[in-house]
Amino acid sequence: MGDRVVEVARSWLGTPYVHQASVKGCGADCLGLIRGVWREIHGTEPEAPPAYTADWAECGNAEVLLGAAARHLVPVSASAPWVSGQMLLFRMRQGAIAKHLGILSDAGPESRFLHAYTYHGVIESPLTLPWQTRIVARFSFP
Image (tube, rainbow, N blue to C red):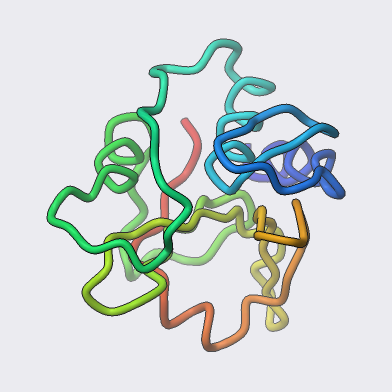
């Protein structure tokens, strides 16, 4: 399944960044990328996301993305191997809620991930140490 997830996610490369969008080639944010990959693999989405801000530093007690991921994806334990196709959830600032998502595209020594990033659109980036330290959880697609 992981190879298929990466293949589908890579087909979104170059899609412009548009907050709350999820249309390949037209616009997507990080959640929109995950939603689009889900639709291509599973058909319809399991639930409609609520409105949300683009603020990565948003504080609060409600871990909305973490809760949704736990409802629809398969949690991966911290000790489990890193496998291409896993969804990564990031907390961008200490004290903030987890608000960024990506898909691990290469789990090797030079790991990479696919994500939608403001001003860049859907891109593939190195999973550098600063990105790694922000990972809150990993999930696999069912």
